[in-house]
Length: 49
Image (cartoon, rainbow, N blue to C red; front, side, top):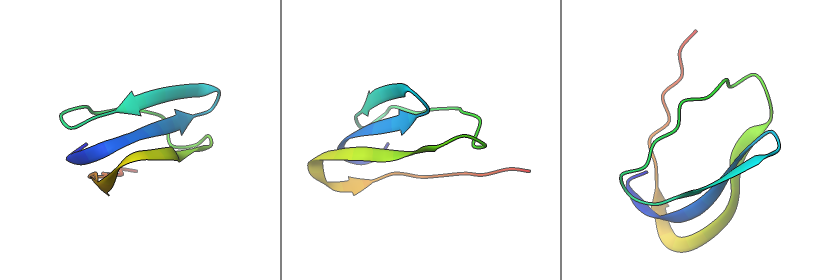
């Protein structure tokens, strides 16, 4: 997480993300931003096969 604040969901779990936070997760299941709490929001997403 680079700027802003958001709630990120991964399956049944919710994580409040602020600058400096990171997640490592299995991208096969449902995941993504749920709530945008402080704008602007900037985050870096890296995917691998």
